[in-house]
Length: 176
Image (tube, rainbow, N blue to C red; front, side, top):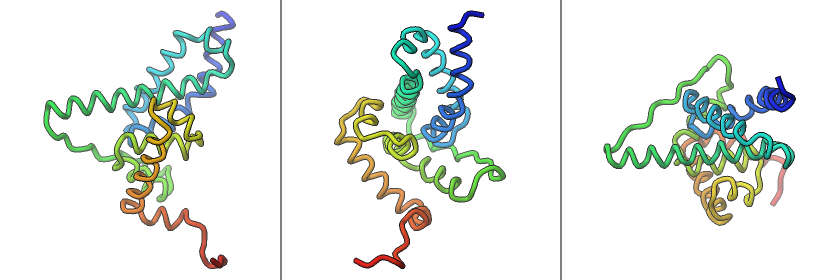
């Protein structure tokens, strides 16, 4: 096996778990779609591996591919839904034995956001990207990232107020 193939395989072993966690969030908890998105991402990275690693760490490139593939999937599904009529969302399948209650509530709430809002929140707050980096990853403007973040957080306040309460700093010791 060549060094390039070995390097790629080692990188996949390190990067795949994080890519999969992100993909699950981007896909609204649908593990099957998330695994498909990660697999397709890894294929695209493998095709360009030599040029990608010459530029440095391949993980940011892989994340951008993953985000764009997910957005493309949303667009295809939206077009299909327009021609087929309204299709109800599938309920989120969850493994309640392996996740905390807050994580389950968050995953369910994320699944009820629009795909764009979900992507913006995942990129900004889970992946910790700047507004500019998130805009580049999603192929939109920084202002779109700002407005989608604001709308998504407002919607989360309605969908999962217990999360907002749990994440808000305690007001007992503060004076304004």
